[in-house]
Image 1 (cartoon, rainbow, N blue to C red):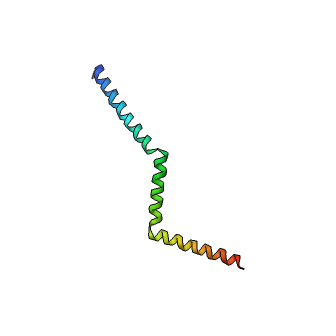
Image 2: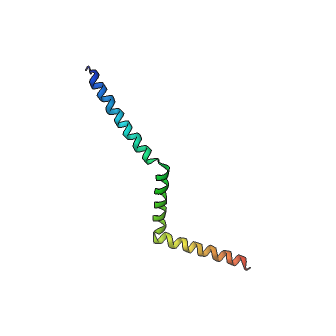
Image 3: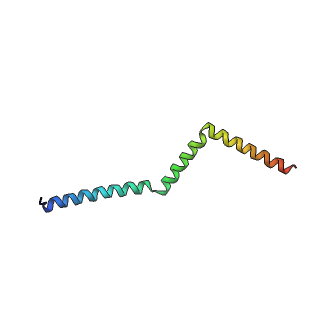
Length: 73
């Protein structure tokens, strides 16, 4: 099957547009500020869960008691 120059040119332009869109999407996804912001939101949501929050409070209280016990021994 013989392809003419216009068909080949159109295919090249479609491929170029597709690659440009992919590069733009990767640039947006890999933006360091966006990655950090998303990490902060995820961490805040995780720490807001009751089982995580109360577990951390319990561990902190336990560590505080151990430190106080060692100080006054």
